[in-house]
Length: 320
Length: 96
Length: 109
Picture 1 (cartoon, rainbow over the protein chains, first blue to last red):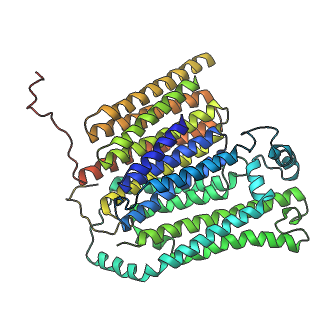
Picture 2 (picture 1 turned 135 degrees about the horizontal axis):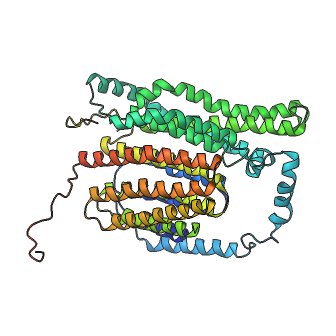
C-alpha cells in the first residue's frame, strides 16, 4: 500500500507545474520512503532518510525556490523520444535484475558468506548490539570515510559557488536593519522554540552516542543538530543565527570532523595495525573498537552538522 | 489489533494525500503535508509495536521534530519570500 | 488488572484510529481551509494522543513508555503551534474564512 502511495506521489510530482506544490510532494515522497524502510526493518536508513529528505532537503529546495521561479515553464520539445529512451533504459534495468537472486533469498551469495560472517563475528570482535553501526563504522569504515569526504567536498563546492555573495548580503542586512525592518515574529513561535531547542539538542547528542545500541549514530545526529539550527534561523533570523554560530566556525568544524576520522585511521597505522584498524588503538582489542567507533562517529556527526548548517546559511543568505 | 490501528493510520494518510493533491490553495497542501507527517510519526510508533521492536520510537521523535521544522520553514518562505526573515513584510499591527 | 489495562489500551487505539479517519474524511469534505485546519488539528492532537496513550499502556513501565511520553509532549507543543502559524499565514496571505453560505441558493429551504 505504501509503495502505491509512493508511485502516485511520484506521478503527481512530475505532472504538477507549481514548483511549490512539487516541493511539498517531494517531502511526502521522503516520508513515504522512510515509512517503507521501516517496514523493511531498515531502521537506521529510515532515520536518515526521514531527517535528510523531509527536513533538510525540503528546506534547501524552498530556499532555492526563493531565488528562482515559482512555476515550471511548459516543455519546449516533444515528449515522445525521452519517454522511449526512459522506457528502454528502465526495461533493460529490470531485465538485469531478473538475474539477481530474489529479495531475501537465503541462497544468495551475500547471505552465504558476507552477512553471516558479520552477524556472527560482530559480537565477539566488536561487541556492539547495533550491527549496522559496527558494519558501517568498523567493517566498512573505509566507505564511511569516503562518505564523509564526499559530504565535505560538497560543502566546499557549495561554499565556492555561493560563498562569494557573502559580502553583498552583509550590506543588505545593514540596510534592512537601518530601516527598522518590521521583523514581526510570531510570539508563540519564538517562545515555543526557545523552550524546545535545548531539549532537541540534547536529543541530538543522545542519538549520536546511542548509535551503538539502537538506531542512530553520526549521520542522523548531525542532521538533527543542523535541523535545530535551521529552526533557530527560521524563527530568529539569519543575523541572530550567524551570531550564535559564525560561518568561520562552521568552516573549521566541517574540516575538523573529517580530520578526526582520518586521524583515527592514521593513528591505527602508527600503532602498528592497518589503516582504520581500531583493534590496536588501546590494549584490549574490543575496547579499541569501541573507542575507534566512538571517535569516528563523532567526526561524522560534527562534519555532517557543520556542512548542513553551512548549506542553509549559504542558501538562505542569497536573497534575490 | 495493532494491525487495525495501523490500517486506520494508513487510511488517514491516504486521505491526507488526496487533499495534498487536490487542495485548491497552497495552505491546504501545507496542512496536508503537516498532517501526513504527524501520521507518519504515529505509523512508525504503531508499526514498531506491531513488529515488536520499540526502538523505532527514536525515529518517531526525530521525525516529529523534522515535520515541525519543515512546516515552519514553508510558512516562513510563504510569508516573507525568503528564509532569513529579514525581508520586511510588516503585518497590519496584529499581535503574535 | 492487566486485562483492564489491555482492554483500555485497545479502546484508546481504536478510538484514536477512528478519530484519525474521521479527521481525514473531514479534510476532504469540509468546504474551507480553516475548517480543514480544524479537522487536521483533531487528528494531530486527539488521534495522536489517544493512539500513543494506548501504546503506552501496552508498553508498561520502562524506557519505551518514557519515549512515548516524550513524543506526546513534543507533539502537544508543536502541533498547536504549527496550526497557529498556518492559520496566521493564511490570514496574512489574504485567505478569508467562509463565514456564511451564499443566500442565493433557492434549492435549500
